[in-house]
Figure 1 (cartoon, rainbow, N blue to C red):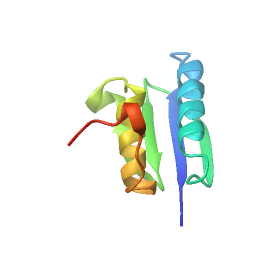
Figure 2 (figure 1 turned 45 degrees about the vertical axis):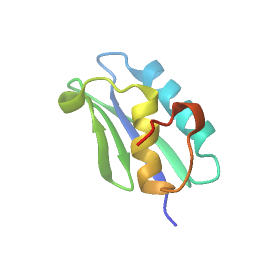
Figure 3 (figure 1 turned 90 degrees about the horizontal axis):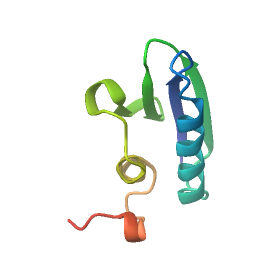
Figure 4 (figure 1 turned 60 degrees about the vertical axis):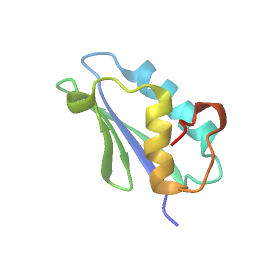
Amino acid sequence: MSGRVEIEYCTQCRWLPRAAWLAQELLTTFEAELTELALKPGKGGVFVVRVDGEAVWDRREQGFPEPTAVKQAVRDRVAPGKSLGHSDRSA
């Protein structure tokens, strides 16, 4: 099972605190499912969350993510059956 998450953030925009906070949220939620979480410095307004190399959230297309939305996108890739409890939306 792979479970590598990468958060690429814009250093020029000073988005490290936002990226680090989101990383903490994901590591807390998926502590058993993730094998690695990387913070990748970028430029030009980038803020992209990738799971195993595949973008699941791109600020340029979707705006800044709510943690719940990113957790759902990551869960769908690394632990499809996992309940997110109160932050899960009902289908």
